[in-house]
Length: 198
Image 1 (cartoon, one colour):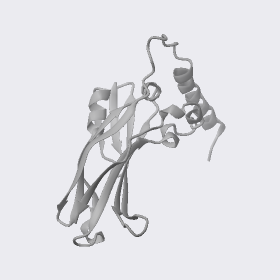
Image 2: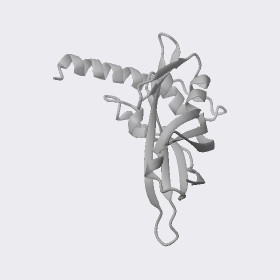
Image 3: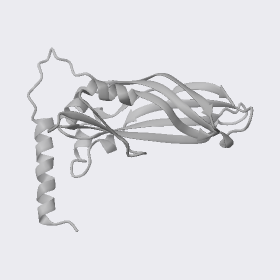
Image 4: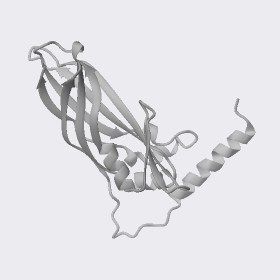
């Protein structure tokens, strides 16, 4: 049950983040804002014990606004989307498997540490720098993505992956309205696609 006390605490927290994000000192014109970039550099899958595992390298560069939000204590949520596609020349391609692996990145001001939480497994890691946290996020190793029994033996499949920062996941309640002011937080890589024969 929501109480007046919880409402007041919620709005006080909202006001603190609003002050940090919107009333920050004006940046000099020479200091251009970084739009950020997500880029899938390499990716591949391997089969072990009847399961396909993904290995990938993603380069993450946060935008200026996303970094400011992170420094203000706002958690950032990253999605890694993986799709297995059956390419068909006679009809539209068929998606035979999808997986979304989600992570949350948050800065803890008291400990001055960056926390990466795997939202699928609840595994948590901490880092001293933003660079090391983003490097950890970008090194995908042996991520189980699909059971081999779901693919036809000898079949040809396209695999594609992308990563994105979801705007609606950037700011939890009661800060959600800030996402409408900062749509440039939304970052997304291009699809990285390759062909695999089962």
